[in-house]
Length: 74
Image 1: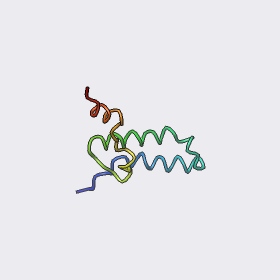
Image 2 (image 1 turned 45 degrees about the vertical axis):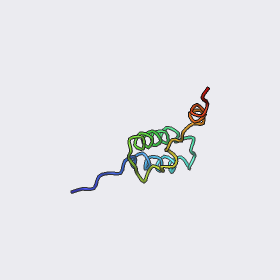
Image 3 (image 1 turned 120 degrees about the horizontal axis):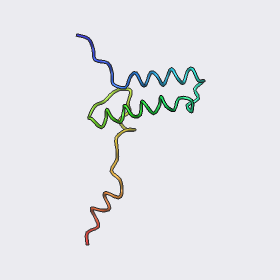
């Protein structure tokens, strides 16, 4: 049985390739970076994980407005 590919690994490798080709100028790889961010956000929102996606970066924190609404009762 073959091992399943790591989610978002293809996008992470594309970033490395793009950065290398463009002398590590991040601005030239913005579209590739955004594709990895979209992949990781969708994966983590669905409950998945991947070494290519740092969970801390994509875990959404509750907004302060939602907590303040719960404490303001008239």
